Length: 210
Image (spheres, rainbow, N blue to C red):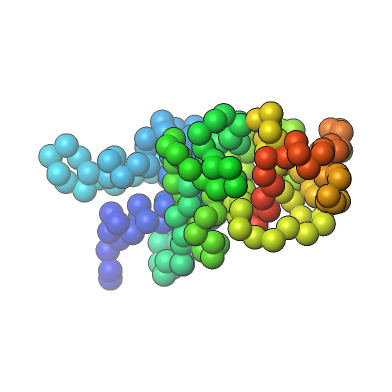
């Protein structure tokens, strides 16, 4: 009979975080634990021995992600999928200066990283939703992946940054040389109409954790 290894359990927790669209620290926070609980540094004791995650922390992570124990066992034995590491930023931070270049590509410091299913865009980045203003499409803690190099069509969900520094997530209704019409994802929030000169950049959302 083959014994479980420390690495298998920690890898399963990493995969649990990934399938929920979270970083290991994000999974810990969602589980009501200290954000560093699942960090790489916590996997080795001060004297260099491998450390097991506590049963309580695993149980809380499964409850927080609504994951059955047999699914977690599957994550222990599954072969890893192709994962792409992409820059991660909180949506609430995205309006601040220094995180994007003029074309809407991630730049500068202050980004975290998250492993996600391969997006096939080296410039893709992830934003973590905060608040409930985009329900029912996106909820607090959801991760969206944005691909600034992907062509945008009517009906696509997009991230828009205005020249005044506002960053919003909307659906593209219409885009002409004179107008950009954006539909709100939450019915209780108004749609927006902007002049193209007021839009610094617009990029398509290609994936979301749900």
